[in-house]
Image (cartoon, rainbow, N blue to C red):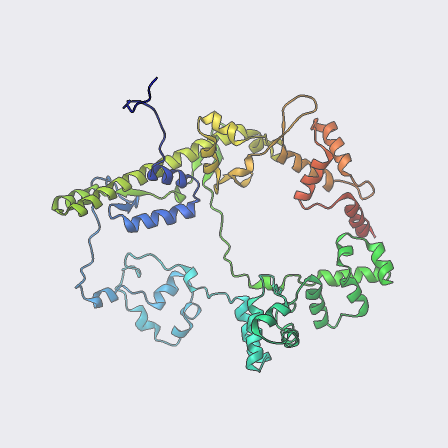
Length: 499
């Protein structure tokens, strides 16, 4: 057969990941905070998008854009809408001095007469957020820098002190080596250590330590309690961790009563003195899905509407602007904005429906957990849920990422309900790994000080009670994952508690 070029027509099906399809997939795995930030960016970029207020009955097609502010309007008229200190204090039900101390000496009568009678002090504006008046929390570096100015007088030593502060971690420990800092600054190691010795007296006591033992020693020295026996105890912290009290008494030459007193002093110290200046704000976890008991006894699944961004496509504005547009580039921009706006509204709606569908299937399969607790948590995988709702396993994985479910038994991450299965010795239904961990913790919490359960004993108990086929090393892995000590350490702990 001769080889020659030719043209063939073939028909085939392929799946192409367009940029919009990739963006829709990415929206599934975003948390509600990340999704809100993404929507805010789109609202700034796309003039055809606007938020749905939900307060009026206008349809998306009839909604008009808000009137623009006249740039030539007198700024004095705008200044009439500014809030006074008295009005802000009244809204917070407190005195002006508690909100604005500098306003306490001014004439409150003149401030209160700024608003006409019967008119709201905010003139349609949002009430001030109380978080705006919370002062910024000083950081550990700022707190120490103020003390350095009083402790260190030499300019060169202040530079060294600043470098030492920069090398502290969130616990207040010095993470850099003095030799490395000396090489970086071109100073003798002895000078670095001398400055470090001065800074170890700063508040909070225990900062600038290089390890846990030194941190505790600094605090004991400040209390004038660092005697030779206490120093020997700090040198054997690993024996304290293993609760080898008999070995500590022999090594220190101390009685059980003296050792108990020294251990009580150690418990009163702060092993992480820098954590008091942890300025990271604590963010509350907001559930994406609510699970409630329905009137008929069934479980009702509802998506939290407060975390779903509501956006509308302003087609009225598009129609009015497109009629007046003559430039091809502007027309192309408007068409792209309209297509992006339509895609975003559809994607947000599809995301909410997908989350609801996955959450409903999770609740359906984990009804035993909702009814009777973690001991009845069933083994469940992403593949199981994906097959039940006829979706791809990767889609379920993205939907359950960074999502939380509020149930009558508490707030849980969606990933919590997906656990591996442990086989049953009797050939019955498999057991969830989370339920097995829960049972192991129950057995250890209920053990007697005179009969500590080993890992082998726990494995045999699980097999005898519930027919759970689990190896000793699996029990040890689960136990260590829950930060539970071994049977040897637990025996020492409970003996010390009984003594």
